[in-house]
Length: 368
Image 1 (tube, rainbow, N blue to C red):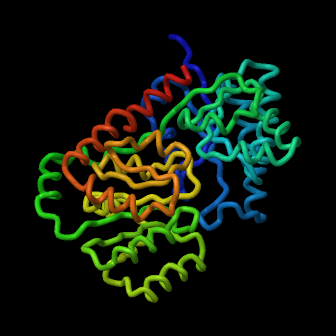
Image 2 (cartoon, rainbow, N blue to C red):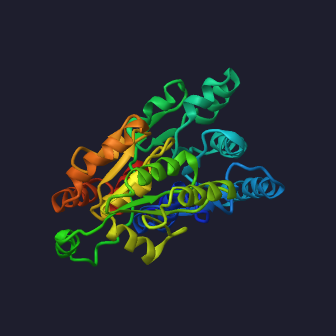
């Protein structure tokens, strides 16, 4: 019997539940990957909560050395043929990856190793442009490795790098929570008699994700039959205070509803009741929330960030270049996209491009 190729995956997993961690959860649970390869998984542990991301403390330093020892031990006893790493673009996490890379780069001198770096965010161009040292360090990190990007729109982020082996594109996928639902019957009921339009903002509650602009949009439309539903975890207490202060000062208690961090059935119901997803982010690479929205047949109004124009086409939503145009674009979107036909287009776009099955097949093929 032919020996399976050994694949070592070093990746983020939940918690906290950010995009890279959700993808890592799925990769580690993939049956097709397990059937094709002899897999070992090492979790990159760093932050316990969203609020903790980007901060340096003793626990994180300890976790770096713990990760170093786990990778060293796994290389010695497992002896992988391929290695997959969820890579960070800058900051302390970049130097952690640089440290860990010294292990498998040394290992590759003694045994052939095919290496894949999966970038779940953007920011490489900004990091390498800040100094020649950063450029040299990143070129060292990516030397002779295969880089996995989320879409062709992110290729410009690595234009200054010249040491990698190849680039491949792997759009993310998300779970289909509508498999057990008669989709046509659901749409008939949803659009039969709309009394209130429900707008959903589902993202981390931080200013970079645009919740302030979403609040201002709600204030602009407070005399209309439109409800704005916010869901997500807080970055910090200051953001939380600013949010509720704005609601109180502008008398928006009857049109704005905050649901906290949602998952499972609560999240599913928010999407099923939503008529549009509002995503005015100022910094994103490939937000999974947009894929989830399409899977429920919910059109999207979002900013032109990262791969968002790759995800949303003219039949599934509006992508704006300037947040100052948000109110006008919102009025256009309400008039054009709140209907059954658009919902069907969104669902079809998800099924064709962003299902978990599609992602799983593409991932296995990339390693092959």
